[in-house]
Image (tube, rainbow, N blue to C red):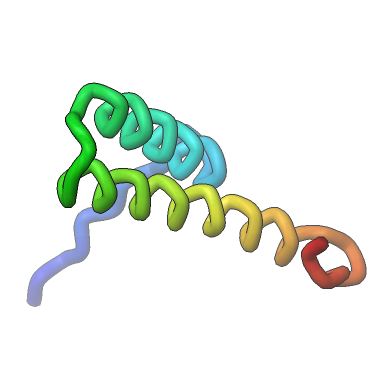
Length: 66
C-alpha cells in the first residue's frame, strides 16, 4: 500500500497566493505585450480573486463581497 507524502505548510494559503500573484505580475512586466503576458496577468488576477474569496469565506457572517 502506498503512503501519502505529507507536507507541512509554513505559510498560509493567502500568503502563498499573494506571493504567487506578485511574482506573476513581475514576470509579466518583463514581457512585451502579447499572449504570454496576458496569460500571466490572468493567473495573477485569479490568485488575487482566490485570496478575496478565502477572506470572504473566513469572515464572520459571510457577508457578500462589495
